[in-house]
Length: 105
Image: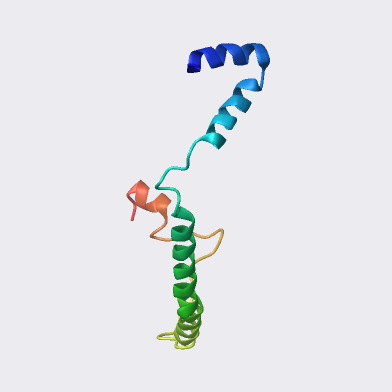
């Protein structure tokens, strides 16, 4: 039976086309390339698990980042002071975008 004939019959019988296709797949021999694929996939998964279990870089990197962050935040290089001339209702600071665009700076 050709595929077109099977499709024409499937129109009349609904899901019979799918059932017929699945029964053909079940009765077909297994492709030689697929016969050992399960063992290959499982072997590769176990290799990945062993590699991940042998060295976990994430916690080490997190610990180094925390130590570096604490060291950097605890060492002030110079004191920082706010500019005394800044206020909400005072003159615009010299590097404000409005003064730079106006060309008055």
